[in-house]
Amino acid sequence: MQAPRLQPSLRWEGGSVVAVDQRALPRDHRLLRLTSVDQLLEAIRTLAIRGAPAIGLAAAFGVALSAHRNSTGGRVDEAAVRADAARLIAVRPTAVNLTWGVRRAAARLDGGPDAVLAEALAMLDEDAAVNAATAQRGADLVESLTPGSSLRLLTHCNTGRLATAAVGTALGVMVTLHGRGRVAEVLVGETRPLLQGARLTAWELGEAGVPYRLCVDSAAAAAMARGMVDCVVVGADRIAANGDVANKIGTYSLAVCAAYHGIPFVVAAPRSTWDEELADGSRIVIEERDATEVATLAGNRVAPAGAEVYNPAFDVTPARLVTAVVSEHRVFRPHPREADLTSPVTP
Ligand code: MRU
Image 1: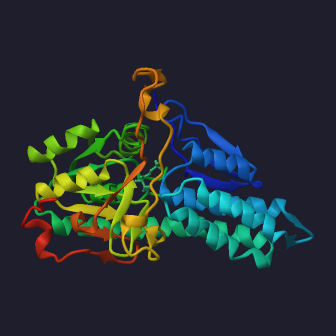
Image 2: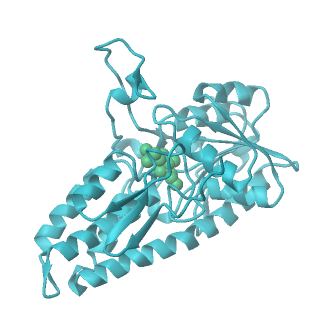
Image 3: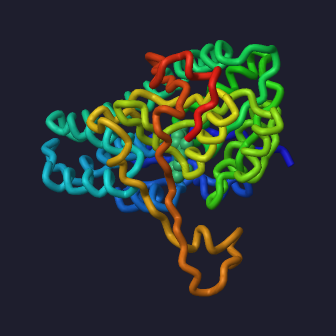
């Protein structure tokens, strides 16, 4: 069956947010039309809209929806909109992009609902430019870190156009490297429990013609030990001022393994994912999600009834395990360059 061509994950159309329903992919390609803040909150909570940049943009549109609903004669009921804004920020606590999106849109409340919407639309446009710049800079960086012509990359979760408004962050880097003829293979971790790697990244890489193989998350260490990985490239949900990185659960184990094997570990994320208010990652709030995500597989219960579950959606990778964080405007190296590749780090 010919895969339907994916549209941008998010757009504004006729007073509503139109979003690809990521819960259904790759089985079904369906769109959601969201006209209220409550609908938008539910879409973000259930991961119909997901990925740090995408939820930041969606939250900005949420403020625009609220501003339109709570205004009369061009005057906005700011208290009502700020209450909705607080709910939007709280719906997923780890990604700082939500706060960023809400704050940027809410800063235009003085100009009325159309000014708020104009800001959200501008942010959507900017994301495409941010993605393009990050992808080029990130590809340059990975090339500089990895001698040899043919690269074996490893990634986790989904960081492509479903998670952003354009080509993506880490996935954009990989697509760009593929365009330069450098990619032999991308190993994609399935990303339990919600399988963003298996369902979404595999879909996007396939569509872009990038050679990939899927593996269970726990195969990553063995692949590194067997010399099958030249560089790990992932995204982020919140980055503290010192370079500690919160990202999808399992990222920290990949960083530990990469350091042990002397493999570069690169994070690609926009400036909006940096939280300069946090000196380090110790105060990043980690979202814990419902037990059923772990206790079931494709809708079937796999754990015994009553099994207790620990289901953190994210973890924090310490900066010392990160080779570099690349964004649209810089490459940040949390620790001295000599330590990058020459001596494996013992955690
Ligand atoms: O729970 P999710 O699917 O929203 O988690 C997404 C991730 O962890 C991504 O790696 C991150 O948001 C970067 S997306 C460009």
